[in-house]
Image 1 (tube, one colour):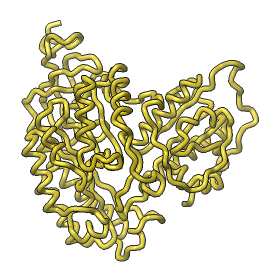
Image 2: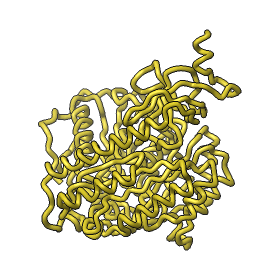
Image 3: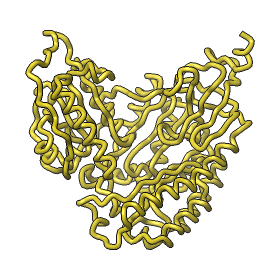
Image 4: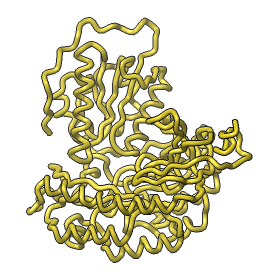
Length: 478
């Protein structure tokens, strides 16, 4: 890994010390996926427990921790750029300490230490609960590349950074042999948490106001396999969560096609609190590319699974993710993927360009499309999906949906924002509420009036007996 940087100013000798006895202020920048978000919440919880003051204003922080992502080139570049920005602030005397955490620590810490000497220390994936001690010491030797092996349970306190919903990480690591992914290299083998631990954490989250629980792992549908549950582990976990909490919405992300059990789809159709939503990252559809990726299944079996989901839960929303530019992908292979996407008509779709990492098997494969070609294919795929998504959103116009209100819109104080059951947090767009009122954390009835490719717009119509909920018609009379 090579770090490209401008010349940074040297650290100032005039950095102000915090007043004696005052808690050290720590800011944390969390990058990458929701699983990284959970790791950040664990670190924040540990820091707060040890008396550190957490601040979201990085200009006020004496110590800044950057929790990195190392999945693909773009993620690594964002992580390095963020580290360099904080290093520059340190050189100008605005930050006293810079720590780096997360995936890039287990993979690239030695290189980062050599190329960015402003880094004061590292927090590896197995050291999240030690973050307070590491920050207090002010230094930590760069660890050699290693795989994580720890599983953090409900004893690791978290400080949530989400609104109304919370992620629940059910397992760590991954056993899948995908040739495009190096996550097992640093996250380690798949290892599940116990049902009892997850139920306790869910109950704690509910007591703190969580209204939606989002279950996560690298391969969430493999949950419990290492505990002897075979293919039914995730279903048993969800049944335990349903029985032992009253959280209104429960959903799971990252279903792997070969570990998804049909019983989960049946439960989705039967249980109102298990939202009708299926996120299954398929990566491609053509058999040649799937074989090169070492992905199980085929376009035919994928279609069969998605049809089962729609049969068991007719209102299900479908999401997937695909890769363009994988070694060997021809225009014919890509057209196969385009046809597959048009046939399925996913409600939500993400795509990324193949990243030739040094420690993944696919990098050794030949005839890789050029990066401009891969980028152009991704753009075409997303353009095709935009029309499908827009049609899906327009079908909601005139309907009244239950929406989890999350508060004031991040772009405008004149709007509220929330999500309906078919929208997972942070990835699937929002419901923008332009009239009426409803408190954050409330399930309000929203009549949809406009639709766009990402978001839909609507106004509050009820429920009339919910405290703080004011329908648009009533607002207009006041």
